[in-house]
Image 1: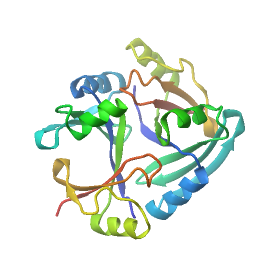
Image 2 (image 1 turned 90 degrees about the vertical axis):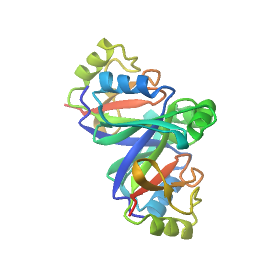
Image 3 (image 1 turned 60 degrees about the vertical axis):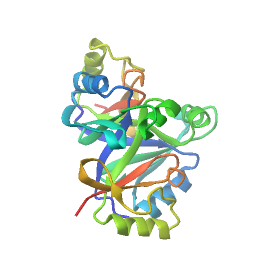
Amino acid sequence: MQAKSTHHIAVAVNSVDEALATYQQLFGAVLEHRETVPEQGVDAATVMLGGNRIELLGATGPDTPVGKFLAKRGQGIHHIAFEVDDLRASLAELEAKGAQLIDTEPRRGLHGLEVAFIHPETSYGVLYELVTNAA
Amino acid sequence: MQAKSTHHIAVAVNSVDEALATYQQLFGAVLEHRETVPEQGVDAATVMLGGNRIELLGATGPDTPVGKFLAKRGQGIHHIAFEVDDLRASLAELEAKGAQLIDTEPRRGLHGLEVAFIHPETSYGVLYELVTNAA
């Protein structure tokens, strides 16, 4: 697998507005994009900080994937996303090498990207996402 | 605070050798540095992946900071480190703005860096480290 860049680091937070204000005021983070995607149960803001994109990830309700993560694990880093050129080829290679995948097929993520997640069992407790620009 | 770059993303693992082999084989990560620092209770390897440095962080024993983290939280992301030009000025600015700091003074970290940690209470569950090259 060839990760050409880090696309973003996602941090699950209880309130995106509050976290965004803190990241701007304390860390000098610069807001890039603010988006709520009700059908994914996600409220998100991306900021640039130290050359990386940090995605502040909130839930639109408790019965959403991020809402369940927050209830179980609390606030903190949710996943790290790498950008790859060919998502299908990367998934096939990872599967052939014995990686456990959450998504064996690309699916639609935020910002019109195609995404797939690698199971944290494979990556020592870290949830990695692979993303590519949808054709 | 001005984070000029992301210095590394640290992942706590039970076995650095095993995690390193997986990161190399599955993700094509490139080994940069391998170091054991007994006085800090740390066994570490840094790899480059997707333009970021990932620090695989193991413990030399259960009674070390990383050993206690692994026992309590399990494997996963431990902290994210940003590089700043002036660590003392950054800490003073953060403190003046009400941030909770673990280290109010720089201390010596791995690789001869000066480091300080921000309390995760301030940063929504994420442990951030600030690093600078020691003069």
